[in-house]
Every structure is written in structure tokens, then in C-alpha cells.
Image (cartoon, rainbow over all chains, first blue to last red; front, side, top):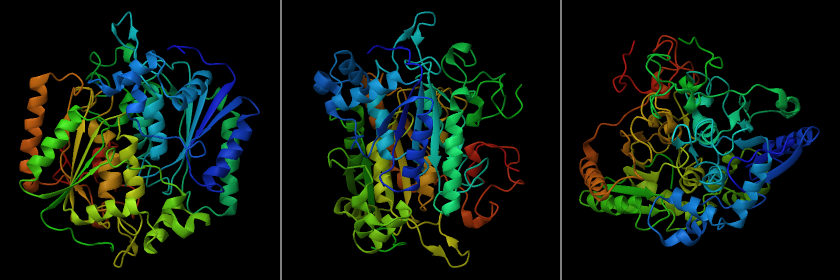
Length: 272
Length: 272
């Protein structure tokens, strides 16, 4: 498996992280995979069912376990030597094949559950998901140009709060900002474009018809997901940043919200 | 153990989440605990050393494991019945005692490592950290008024990137926003005030004297941490929000960055 391999057209991976059978998430998972299977070959990663271990530790370093140095680089060395643990390699093979990722989870403490966070910590290794150098720029490829470029992701997330509490100026922070570390920091970093979030609000207080409605809404969404435009962030190589660092002063001056990193045309606020 | 118990003055808890002995984080941990011990009785939670399991699952639900319903509420029921697993109870007792929390971790994929995320997922249960009702407001106490009010927290975080890349308008998002789900969504939600972040930038490229400098800088920080003013967010009960939802339009109109949730006087930008 080498970096920058193209995905297999028509293949999708549904990553799912909820511990309980019969839960709202479980029902969404089953219905979503079924609907998606009408258009894609769907691979799944049911992290609880697989008993995926989310803790990155010495066993992820292979022969580099005893060496000093940066842990992400040592994990990359292990990858290059073919010493990545079997459970991680299995996940990497699924990601490599998929042109579309669905990442489904309940919002716990305003972020992904630990089992999903650790899936990224362990599976998105240097050498696999990022780490090679752009020959033109002489810089590591990242932010729109990583090892998994050419793929799209849809986040499906259930939240106990309503649309106002996790909307713009909501008391809990708007969900796009809360999940920026995932959509931009993980996915866009390695080249994966994200679609608009698919949010199930008030997830704890839905009645039977509310659940049915949400299941149908998810079915509809995944049926047309292949033709949706991605919500692109700015590419590092497009020159919007000073070198590799901060957004140029002439772009959206004065703003400090995380929305400044959306590429022009996808922002909902006036641009300069 | 009941909700709203006051901490023990002079007791601190240092929570630490890095897998490698001899790492920069390990050296910071050792030096930090030593310096803090001159002023506090310091409890520690070395999550990797304890082999803490971060995956919330059926065993956290006690007799409610088979019941339908919201998982956080079922975890709370187990807490009320005294069926919280032993490893979680041990952590809760340490938190209950501490007036000061130090939370130290390397920034992995722009957030806490899974083992730390899962420490919050499993340990900050309903009934312990939040969940009772404010008799005046008739609403659950949260955001400045949770079950752990009266405590302060210092985040100590190492980052591979420089201050510009994770500063205001930085390409990776500013660190205060990236960690908002932790400082506001977890800690402030349950009533814990946070101090300004303690960030070790360029953590992967420090030379020997750079490491010595950072160790000394952390020692200095923890020596005076008890007298530092907290960086308070807005309290739900202060009326800055419409009910429990979005910030009132007359406060910082037009702004959508997460900094709007800082209480007046602690914001670095003009207020209305």
C-alpha cells in the first residue's frame, strides 16, 4: 500500500462508533448502509463490534518502540517497514479502497467518542495518510493534498441538543466549529473533502415518528450523496496563507472564526 | 460521593496522557508534578501507566445495560445505584478531592489522544459531574454551574506546529478554538474554570536547551498557578443567552467565533 493511491470507484466505507444495539445510532447505521448499498459496494467498520483498540501505544511502533523521537514519525517508520499492526492495516486497506467515507457517531462531550478518535490516531499514520513532499513546493503535502486526496467524507452525527444550541452563536458552540478538528484537522489535512454535516438534533427526545423521519432523511441523503458538491476548505498550495502559517491579512480581514478556512464560494458570509 | 461537593483545599490532580517514557511529555510531567508538589498535595492519573480503558461500553451501565434509552442517562442511573466501575470511581474520587486539575497531553490530530477523550467520556458521568436541577431556573445546572464548580483547570499541551500555524487565523485553526470542546464543552459545562492554555510549540523540533527551557517555563507556571485569574466563559445563569440557546443579538453582534463565549473582561477584542 503506497501513498496517493486512487480509490476504487463505487466503493464506500461506513465507519460507525456507537456501543449499543437497538439504539437510534444503530438503526441509522443499518438503514444508511442498506440505502448506500444500492449505489456503492459498502465496506463497514463497526468499531465497537470489532472491539477496536483506540489507544496508540508501543505496539504501533514496531522495531522503533525503543527509539527516542517523535511518536508520529516512529509510527510512520513502522508503516514503511511493514510493521503496522494487523488491525490497523485492515482499516487502512478499507480506506484506501473507498472513494466515499461515511463517519457516524454520537456527539459525546462535543466531539467524537474515544473509540473513533483513536481510530484516527492509530489508522491515519504517516506514510499512509500523509507525509510525502510536494516536489514543487518543497513542503509536506497537506490540507487538500494529502495521501488520501480524491476522496469525500460525510459526517453523520447525533446530538442531544437542538439546532440553536449548537448553531451559530449557540451556547455550546456551532457544530461546524466543534467538529473543525475532524473535518479540517484530520480529513482535509490528508486530502479528504467533506460534505455538509448530516446532523440529527434532539436525538435523545425523538419519539417513534421522529425516529422514522430521521431514518428516512438519512436514506434520502445517502441516495444522492455521490452528486453532492463538497464543502472545500482552502488548499495550502493555493497561496491563501503566509507560507504555511496564517491566512493573509487581505482575505476576510478582521475575522477570526474557523469559517475563514472555507474556500471562497463555499462560505456563507461576504468575502472580500 | 454526591454532586456539588467542595474540593479539598491544597489538593491537585495531574492527569497525563502520553504513552512513552523518556518523551518530552514524560519529562514535563515529572518536572511539573515535582514543582506543583511544593504547594499542593498532588494526585496523579497517568492514563497509559494505569492502562485506562477509554471505551464507554455496557459495563458502564450496570443493571441498565439491557435497557433502552439515552446512554448518558443510563450511565447516570448506574452511578446513582453505585454500579459505576471501580476504575471510574477511583478517578472520580481524585477529581472530587482536587481544587486544581492539570490536564497534560500531546495534540494529536488537533485534539486530545483517545485515552484522554475517553477519560472524560467515562469519568464525567451524569450524577457525578452534572445533572442536577437549579431550583431557581428550573433547568439543569451547566456552563459555570455544574457538579464540579469551585475548581480550576490548567491545560498543558505540546504541539508540533508553531505559534502562527495554530494562532489566530492560523492554517490549522487557533488552538483556543480547537480545544473549545474541552475547555468549554467539558470543563466549563461541569463548572470548572480554565486558565490560559500552557502550550509548548514546535515540540518535535526542540533541541536540548529548548527542552530545558520548556521544562523551566512549566515549573515557573505551576509555581504561581494558584494565584492566576481564571479565563471565565459566560455563565448560563447570567442571562447572556436566549433561554438556554444562542447568545443575545445585542452582545458582540455579527461575531460568530467561539471567543464570543468568553465572559466580558476576559475577551481580548472590543466588547459592545
